[in-house]
Length: 424
Ligand code: NAD
Image 1 (cartoon, rainbow, N blue to C red):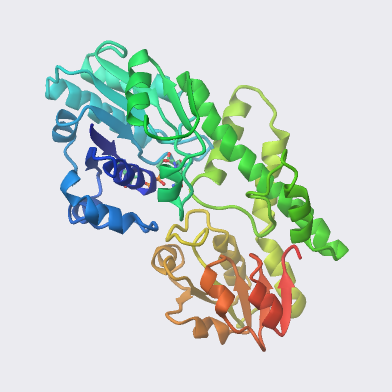
Image 2 (cartoon, protein in one colour):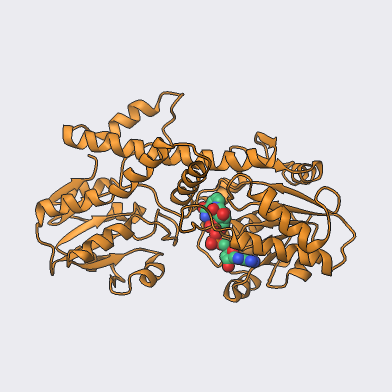
């Protein structure tokens, strides 16, 4: 198929690259000229394991542009994968999705395309958004009617950053929300060779599956952290507890361990959006509120533990191992290192941060932090805080150090002079 992808971020680029592996021709559309230039050279604009090899290998199938007319005119299927950030009131900001849909609608009109085009929303949007914001923009700008002049559907994405290629290629399930039979048919054909359950449903249900899935995973993590805090006080090893519990097939061990909470571009924003959407329709969401409260408080447990050993942080050097919201990514969105850095700088500490990929991104947010080129600069600080579980942190020698561990790095527990785990 000939496929255009609007929005060349983590989801868009991974989707396009993976689909090019099946021989599909891909045109990326973005408003960021830097990303367009990189993609046209076969270079990924974001870091994701395996992505560079695919883009290089399939260069002949891939191009990028900011021109909607040429991209829509030359393709049969378009995915919208632009960002849906949090608006001030917690709901999603649909400005990018609306603008993408308006531009696609105009292009459908401008190019005078005769063949019926399929538009699929891959961005995470609140239930009802595709059938209101996207449908309205497409019909208004194209002068065509959904189901006749174009097909409309949604296909939420469940990939995890860091293992996004693996997740896209081997999904647990594919969810297809279809406004009309056409969108369902096109996506069923596109994903025919994927050997996994396919859930074909209405658009709002598909949108809700995505939110429910993320809200449940976030709940599992906050629950694990609350239990972990109880374990810490009681002198119980929380990891052993969750091993014992997770082996129950009804529960499952995945995403079931304690630490300093969840970050990233999805869980916090999606739980907030669900909460706000529920409030707007008069539904109380005690569980979702608690999930966010626990997640906000959890990184600060590190500061309490640090204060136990260094009561006055003014002028003291504190090193942070890990700035990305998780290992194997350069993404710092909602990273749990952010509240930790804020608290430390508020208390007058001098922060030295190290991350294999994310220092540049974090330096935009915190220009005054010292970004170490070598881990030894962090190890020379008065205390070391482990905020992301990069595998290389397992190979360090922590002897003689005060370590506060938010991610359970075994080597730190074994070698540090003073070691405090947040929940163990
Ligand atoms: P991102 O911020 O990395 O990328 C979005 C891209 O869209 C950017 O390159 C931006 O320049 C581009 N863009 C914005 N407006 C545009 C427009 N009008 N036309 C063309 N391009 C435009 O976002 P992301 O992390 O890839 O997330 C995209 C969506 O997928 C969000 O709704 C997110 O919630 C969802 N999602 C993300 C993940 C994840 O792990 N990152 C996983 C599943 C779902």
